[in-house]
Image (cartoon, rainbow, N blue to C red; front, side, top):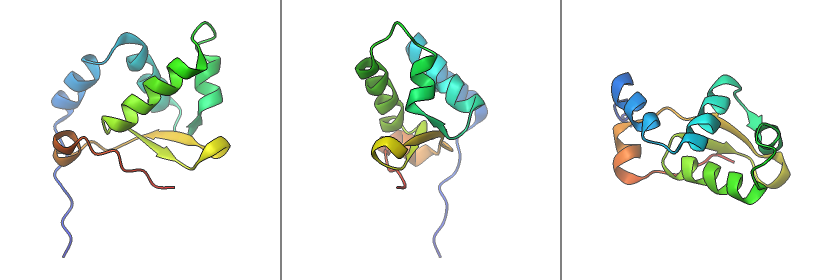
Length: 97
């Protein structure tokens, strides 16, 4: 039987989010408030920030296991991922397409 890894405590999750760079904290908050948000919707919130920079920030959040990417190319949307102990230890960046 496949066992789900244990979730981390809300306090530890909040500490991880606080350790992010300010723009990444804001991107994470936007994704939290708007599940299944597209890159274009996020980019509209940062008109002075180049798209490549935002893409790098979002990719970093995905790599850290805080955000999950759904889809490919223009159909991509992002959601907040349930953070588990193993996703933090392994730097899990799995995504479902």
